[in-house]
Image (cartoon, rainbow, N blue to C red):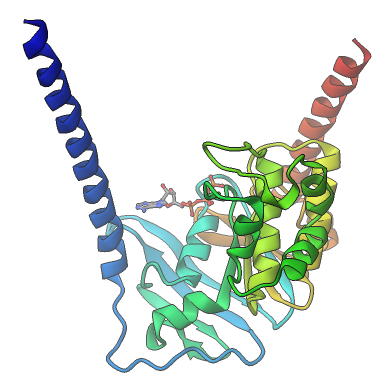
Length: 306
Ligand code: ATP
């Protein structure tokens, strides 16, 4: 019986592995299906970014035909400027970044970059022009140098080091026993959310795309980390057309314009000061977040005293 049970276990193991493999392939097809939804026109020309002005003009969008997500959304991000999108959870903020990459086609209106409709340009040229600093960066099971260099594989060691410094992660890396050769990822050093985000910023500095999307982390960070990340984000977005998808409000204060989305519609727009004066949705969100972060800080101070 012993002799038999081992091979059976082994077959079970192989079977599970194969099933696992199949599920992954299915998941992959799901992704491909999303990609399939948008097709390039035959001989679509490459996107040519001269200035990097983004324009959403009366955009209507729905994922499913019976549920509108964005309704008549119009805004412009002038070349080199920063526009922040804020609003309650589910308002459609991340949808805007997906539409910029043209993961989906819109049902009404148009999205253009320097006057070129996203539906009329080659998708890979569009995606090459946009850099994304996501909420949660995927790290490879490789050295930290490799993970930074991923932004531009041809970057020299010196360029990698400089990008890390400008992203405020250089000192942290130098202090690791093996420095830039330290292995990270699942089987190596685990980085915190804030550290990973700075690696993503360093990558983006190397890629140097004309257009940038920052997806601000949802999770609360301590004040020190938050300031370091803000400094790194300021550097990476300087003179670059930037859309900030803000789940919290800490990085939006200096934005040239803030768009407040509510259930897919623009409810308010203006600078931080304009919106506070308005005393509407934005100022209510601001008050609530300030109270929450003050409470958090008080809790930290109390813990530090213990
Ligand atoms: P949060 O701040 O919570 O991240 P958000 O403002 O970024 O929210 P979106 O992710 O843009 O919100 O989602 C807007 C709406 O679209 C939500 O109601 C969501 O359920 C829906 N939605 C998002 N992705 C899909 C999808 N792939 N298929 C169908 N509906 C979706």
